[in-house]
Image 1 (cartoon, helix red, strand yellow):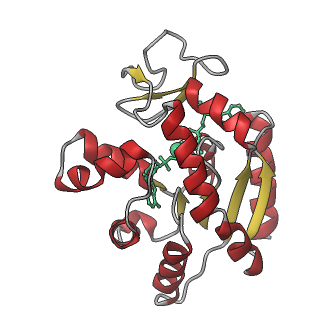
Image 2 (spheres, rainbow, N blue to C red):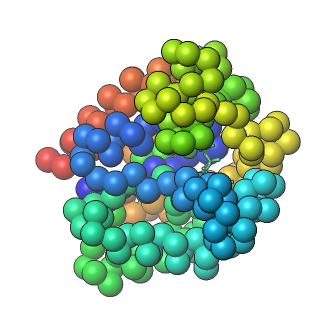
Length: 217
Ligand code: AP5
Ligand code: MG
């Protein structure tokens, strides 16, 4: 399975990715997680991308595409992958198509998680994430069992640096301008499946599974 998860900031891409990656035994590749890991570890890449993430702006395409291509060349991607947060521009989508077609491959499906703007702002202001393993929580809807402590790994549960209201609004407008055109791009290719992301997490998950299973038949 070669899959892409598309959707605005806060749609639930990361939340749904865990279950999908597990079910189809494919690696979950989140460009946002890769960037945050490098920022946290103060690598050269981390220093290069920090200001873009802080502002909620996109990291330049050339750099992002290079990182993703390197990641897709790793052995664990041989049987497929789940991309979360990539592609985010038409140029990134074209680079991905080109790179796959060089190996006579294509994407199997693009899952578009649809959530309206007002809901996104509430979700992101309440979101909490584990600093160590990246597990996602919500202050009201999905708190960790013990406040501030990750259920999965025991790491510290924090508020993501780019989840302030101003940055969230900027991320949403960047999405509308640069990423939303990908909906039509993938629809034309017959790859798009749109799911209502305002339903409960398990309902969204079941709908994604049933669409992907139908696709595989
Ligand atoms: P990235 O990390 O990809 O962030 P994003 O796209 O803004 O998306 P989020 O991670 O904020 O949201 P999500 O859809 O994963 O939602 P989640 O599951 O957490 O990118 C960050 C930055 O990196 C970018 O701004 C950019 O600078 C850079 N970047 C990354 N990729 C790039 C690229 N390709 N090109 C250039 N730059 C790039 O859920 C959110 C909250 O909602 C959680 O609290 C969750 O518990 C809750 N929730 C989820 N589903 C439900 C539900 N069904 N019902 C109720 N609550 C729910
Ligand atoms: Mg995410």
